[in-house]
Image (cartoon, rainbow, N blue to C red):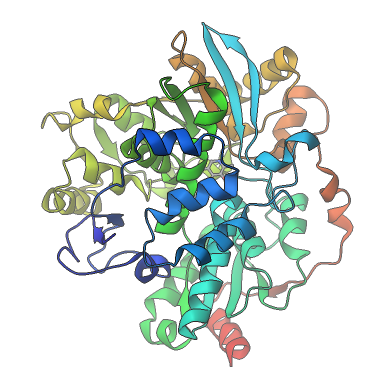
Amino acid sequence: MNYISTRGAGIGERHTFSDILLGGLAKDGGLYLPNEYPKVSADELARWRTLPYADLAFEILRKFSDDIPDEDLRELTRRTYTAQVYCNVRDEENAAQITPLKTLGVEGGAPLSLLELSNGPTLAFKDMAMQLLGNLFEYTLAKHGQTLNILGATSGDTGSAAEYAMRGKKGIRVFMLSPHKKMSAFQTAQMYSLQDPNIFNIAIEGVFDDCQDIVKAVSNDHAFKAQQKIGTVNSINWARVVAQVVYYFKGYFAATKSNDERVSFTVPSGNFGNVCAGHIARMMGLPVEKLVVATNENDVLDEFFRTGIYRVRKSSETYHTSSPSMDISKASNFERFVFDLLGRDPARVLQLFRDVEEKGGFDLQASGDFARVQEFGFVSGRSSHDDRVDTIRDVFEQYDTMIDTHTADGVKVAREHLQAGIPMIVLETAQPIKFGETIREALEREPERPAAFSGIEDLPQRFVVLANDAERVKAFVAERTR
Ligand SMILES: *Cc1c(COP(=O)(O)O)cnc(C)c1O
């Protein structure tokens, strides 16, 4: 398998899975994709139906990573997808499934269910891919005798998923910036209670945007970046996207009895990483009817799928909502889908994303390309804070199931796209305990807390406080990588 950039660089060159694993953007600013999607045969689909999660992951990943020997990949997936790692399940009996399907009921003739993706160590779906990434990074770095220093900024979810994936990994250090005293007590405890010597929590005297600006400033110092072997683990990382393809297959098998059936998925979306994996599963031949993109008030993606207009927002137009992991101004993985939508024409993708930089967006309505969105199964909807509160309450009353705010955005929008006879699977992207405030508002009770998390706020915390100053952060990193 060869990887190419959505903007054309590397066509005719050889880029393997391992080549692009540790990198970010392609050198022309595009995103990496395989030169063609591997197809799944009817025989394979039949054989995969009964596989345990780790072995299903192996079968799917090996189609994208032919430069990793099978025995190594099998070992990596078996070490990653265990009931011990994904132990925070609602129902003990389901732990071995890694991503259990929770049936809610039948609405409008459609079976409605939740695919539980947030049973990992940080209680959000990002663990599904990040845990694999930790093991893949360690494996690849050891093979080449290299080390990596991951620098990131977080307001919660991504940072903690990265830390829990990289803790104790050989050859890797994590420097994670977070805004001092701006995260919830639970999120702060989750990150700062890690005592591993390769994890550095840096509380910046500022807000999240300041943390992000520091990461940008450090990354723009190319000499420092090269010398200190600085890398990132953001959502455009290809391995993260492809690891997420696995649970679409798993969810399909759980919701159907035979491979003649079709299902739809609703995906609470921000950077388009999660639903991009659903698109790839569908391109591989998984019988998916609809891919429903659910957004919150930050509706860049909903606007596109309704109108064909992609219009990125300024930070002043980006709302802070009660489903904060979907508060985005532009969707960093969206370019991967646009590449496919335009029949894989890199020159046009380059032009469109130049328009994004220069004019703030583009319009595909007039060109006729937008009509093809339907062929790819995409539809969308948006949700508001009131919708979340209503949906959390309603799902709790009707189905005795507590859902988080992001999943609530998903259920709200899923209900607008039900088709009789076609199972609708909503991806559950986080557990309610992470967003307790809205749970209390909706249900007037405390969110459920998985046993492993009782009293984590009282554990000793390990972090440093630094001034909002990129030079200070650079000095801190340099001292620790000597
Ligand atoms: C990251 C995240 C999302 C958005 O996922 P994308 O891949 O960015 O679309 C949704 N819900 C939760 C809880 C998340 O952490």
